[in-house]
Every structure is written in structure tokens, then in C-alpha cells.
Length: 631
Image (tube, rainbow, N blue to C red; front, side, top):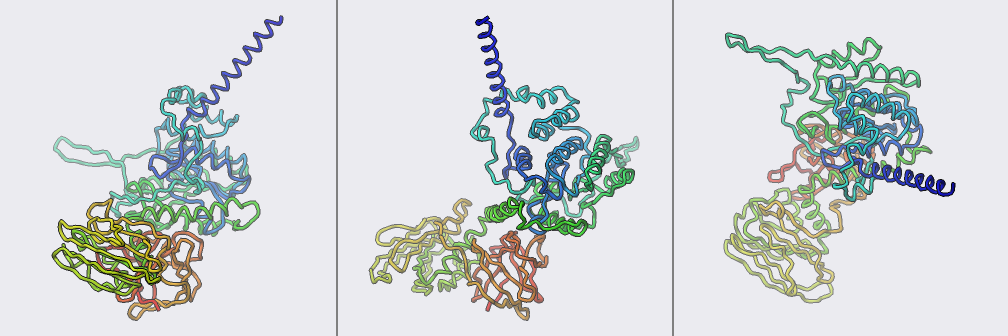
């Protein structure tokens, strides 16, 4: 009897250990779909994981459906504008039946007033096994999940077995395991409440082709005549059935359901009409954001990252801002900002603001970092000795919108004009001590005293084509030595080295190279100013953000200049309250003849003062840019 008991205990331990091994293996061998800026990383695991972290009954709305749902709306932007809370629960090519089960799962912990369902699934006929797994596997274990697996995966045995037992498909992934798989947690900040944001613009389709995609059959007759006929694509009957079930589920819970088609070129009016005919039967109306009215103001030249299929960050900001107003207008929502129980949202919004600006800054870094660098030096020029020389040539790649900064250092030479010439300049506290250019190699040696009256020996050498660029202080060499302008900055207080940079090489990696400067490019102090250009003037108050950017506040309205929803030349700069978002952040840089120019942190464009207001223009660093007098 004792031996039998021991055998039973051993068998039980074995079964328990085996079960634990299987559970642990399933956890770590099942892929974790994390969020990142890689276009292939939509972050399904991280999205649903983040949803489960939402405090109970704190979401006012839900958005669900295929990829256009989470590539069109940023709930955090909506919250910033309105204080209304929501979450994107969509997934790539998400069939309506997957949407139904995620809605049912969401209602376990949330009680939204309204659910928006993207109708893209109506024209999708072939399910994608990999994408269905991405929708089902992140769901928490429950009887509902088992039912979801049965209804969503039952059409394919391999898919069904994998959804029930992930090791069925992923048992061999141990060969691919990495640190990220072990961490099982998204390493990027997931602050967008289900949205997936791309910061690049790509459009290979003409703007006038918006929403005109048709599927056509081509026929060639015996006499050679070619004709085309529109393929009458039927609606997906499964989608119609499951949307009906979602409507019933919402009605049972006192929730309004709204079918919506978010902006995309991968749609047309014929499909909208077909969907609406079905919706008429169940008493719903399609909110169509794809039509010619274009209520969100999408600019397809710049607002998509994949040729019009999905919106990028700029398109999402437009849709989100429009959506915030749409929600406030059509439902009796209140702002939850500062409310007890919504601390997560306020804390995440604060972090999102920084994340958003950092992402955009990285996007425009190559253009902006040199402006910040040189303007930062100019802002503190009284404390610096600035030493300059040229190697090979500076004219070809010289950005003329830095001419104003050169004026701050006292430079008089137009650097875009000295083709393949040597050049040396020395600026002491903003006053030009010497400046010379010549086709031949130039050497300049002199003694300089810092504020403590300590002498320093300085040697500068500039060579044109095939020459060199040297800047030595007390026998220490500091110049980067790259083609173009080389600059070395010395502290006037004690003669210590501050920073060095080069600008102008045709080598992309060396086009601009610099040591970091701690001070941001704060060119003007906070306070009241008047912007002037010709007969136009504009009274503002300048406020400085922590990152060194400005809020430009209209003295008449008290609102901030904003580039939100704007990204093409000629768009009028709007005004809005300070929400801490990138759209209201501006840089101000030195222009020529004591003037200045404005740079939008949001979209990298500049602004022209015209007819008493501002309009946006593209920034071309090799041509003149609009400038203003600021008094």
C-alpha cells in the first residue's frame, strides 16, 4: 500500500511538473507582438495587455475593427482635446466575429456609452490565420475565450489547435528566443491606448484618386475592343451577421453602436452605399469619413505612411481632433481631466506629451539639430570665443537659413558664395575679430586672453580643395576636420573647450556632426512681443516650454498658435488652448538683418506672417525662408 501511494505521489508530481513545463513553455514560446516604430510591429499583445490595465468602468467609448480603426484614431489625443476616454481594440484585418468577442470581453470590465465599429470587414472575404491568432491569443483565459476560439478559428483545424494549444504551432520557437521573449513586456512606451502610430509619410497615388478605387473586370472582344465592367463585390455575410450580434449586445447593455469608416483610399463610395443598405435594415447609419466631404481634412500627399491605405501620425491627429469635437457634440460626455479615478489618464497624458515631441524631434532631427545647435550658441554668444574654418568647400551645402546666426557672431561673408575657398573667422563675445577668405591655404596664429587674463595660443588652418581644417588651442586639436565649416567654441571665462561641430559635407553621416550643447535654442526671453512683416503685425506673448520650445500666445484671444491639422503650404495657422501637445510648440531662430523665423515642432514647416495672420510654408534650407521682425 505504501509503495502504491508513493507511486501515485510520484505520478502526481510528474503530472504537475509536466503541466508547469507546458504552461511555461506556452507562455514563452508563444510570440509576443510588441509595439514599436517598425511598420510590421502593430503591437497586438501590448495593445490588449494595456487594455486589461485600464481601471474598471473608466472608458467612455470603444473603437473596434480592422487596421484602419487603430491607424486613424489616437485616444490620447482625443483625451487631450476633450477629456473623454476611449480605447482602440481593433486588430489587423480583424473579422467582425473577432470584433464581437473582443467587445464582449471588454464589457466584462467597461461600460462605455458608445462603440464605434469600422466597417472595413464588410469587404474582406478571406480570413488570415496569423492575424486571427493575434486577435485571439492575447485574450485572457476564460470560457468566453474558448467560445471565441470555437467561432473564430473553427474553419481551420491547424488554427483551432494552435489557438487552444499554442505549442502545436510554436513548439520549435525555442531556437528564436531572445531577451525580449523572456521579458514578455513591451519595452516601448505604450501610451496611445490601442492606437498604432507611424511618423513617416509615403504616398505613391495621386491626390485626386482619393476613394476612387474600383475592382474591374477587363474583357477583350473578338474584334479587339477592350471594355471594363465594375465587379459587383458582395458584402461579407458573416460580417453582417456579427455586426447584428454586436448591435444586440450593445442594446442589452444600454450602449449605442455606431458603424464608421475611417479615412482610407482603400475604399470607395459604392462600398459605402452597399454597407448603408444593410445598415438600413437594422436601423443604423454609417459615419463615413472617406467621402469627398473629407470632414477630418486629410491631405493624402502627407497624411499616410503606406500610399493611402492607413493614416500616419499627421492624419491621426486630424481625425482625433475632429473626433473629439464629434463626441462632444453628439453625446453628453464630461471631461475626466483631474477627476478622481482617472489619474492613470492624466499621468499617461503627461508622459505622452514628452514621448510625442521626442518622436517628432527624432523624425526632423537631421534638419533641426543644426538650427538648435547654432542658435543655442548665438543665444549665449557673450560667453564664447567662436573659431571657424573651412575644409574643401562650404558653399555647396550651406543652409542659408543659418545666415542670421552667422550675423549674430559678426560674420559678414556670405558662405554660400565662397566656392572651394579657404575661410577663417574669429568671433569674441559676438564681435568679429577677424575674417578672411582666399583660394589658397590660410594659416592664422594669435594669442588670446580669457576673462581671468590667462593667455592662450591659438592656431587655425583652412584649406580649400584637398586642404585641411585645423583649430588648435594650447596645442590641443579640436576641429572635427570634416568637409565644410568647422567650428570650435571656447569658454571666455577660463579658456576651456565647450563644443565643436562641422557642417556641409556631402557625406550624409557627416553632413552635420557636433558635440552636445546643454542649453536649448532659446533665442528670445519669455514676454510680450509684436511680430511684424510689411503692413502686417501680430501681438503675442511668448512662453517657454521645458524643452526650450515656445508657446506663441495671441494677445487678442489668449490662445496658442497651432499647426494641428495643417501640413501643406498655404494652410492658415489655427489657434487652440495650450494642451501640451506638439502642435502648439514652436522654435524661433535668428534670421537675417536682425529678423527671425518660426519653425513648427509639429510638422517641420515654417510660418509666414501675412494679412495679420500666419500661414504655413515648406522649409527649404537652401532658399530664402519667410522672416519677421520681432520687437
